[in-house]
Amino acid sequence: MSDDVVLFDDIDTAGGQRFGVATLNAPASLNSLSVAMVRLLTPKLRAWAADKEIVGVLLQATGDKAFCAGGDLRQLYQTLLECGPERNEYAERFFGEEYELDYLIHTFPKPFLCWGQGIVMGGGIGLMAGASHRVVTEHSRLAMPEINIGLYPDVGGSWFLRRMPGRVGLFLALTAANLNASDAIFCGLADVLIPHERKQHVLDAIAAGTWMGDAQADRAALSNILADAANTEGAPEAPHSKVREHFDTINALMFGDDLHEIAARLRTLQSDDSWMQTASKTFSKGAPSSAALSFALWQRVHRMSLAEVFRLEYLASLGFCANKDFAEGIRALLIEKDRNPKWNPATLEEITPAFIEDHLRPRGDMAPELVGLT
Image (cartoon, rainbow, N blue to C red; front, side, top):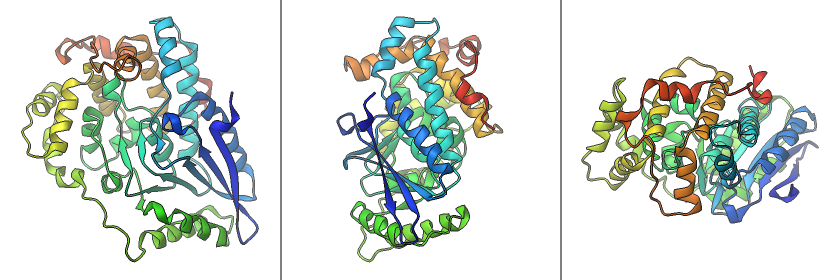
């Protein structure tokens, strides 16, 4: 395992305490989240949570292009080919450890600042969503693109998509629609838009601050620092939010409890807006199994806790590993890059309740990392 895929440092503050700094450091892969990264981040975050000298954490990434473009799926792909429907121990660790890390961020006992510059997709949103303070910049582009690779929005996506305004979360799951900074804030995936050039101002303010060691007071102090950076005179105007503009249309498209009716409306959508047209086309080309499971999870998780959702997603993810579409989607999009996946089942109409239940049944024991989550 290469230790340099995550860099660790700290910021000394005026009061003598420190902010821990973790930097994803794989810019060639757009900082895609690997097992090696997870195995470095989780113990370090636990140590920082327990260290009284550490009053907060900053999670960032090397380079301006991407915070994290998603999970690193290449090694997982090889195991999908080798294991097929049989037990996949690599996948068990991959998802169990990733979800443990995501949950740790959601429940972190100190201020946790995530700087979501550039591309933030899939597993990157999983890292960002649970942070107490989530910054997007004028260059941020977010999406949950799993329908394109025969998966579903995991990493807690079933939980946070369900908590977005109206039925926006279901729309994002089915269409992989791209979000800008204003969209991300409207959807509840981010808290504040700060020009990327103001990042050093934020770091300097953290260093100059006197931190109390009290989580509530320190979160409020960090919020004030971010608000000050966001409200700088001459800051660029926030981008127009497509999600807000089309909110009523999205809710009408996603209305009801029949996925076939939703699919028909989405496929036949007529819009002058290229963003909405792309959403319709992406759904039409996406994996029917992804759409069906995303919808099934949407229906099931409404009253579940975050811990319960991660345990359900663990079952679902292993279910996708045991079926065919996930490997086929990775092949078509990331390996051979022909962008011509052959989905199986090929249509929503072919998907049965038994097919959905097979994706959500236990395959062996629950991941030990997730058993004790509360």
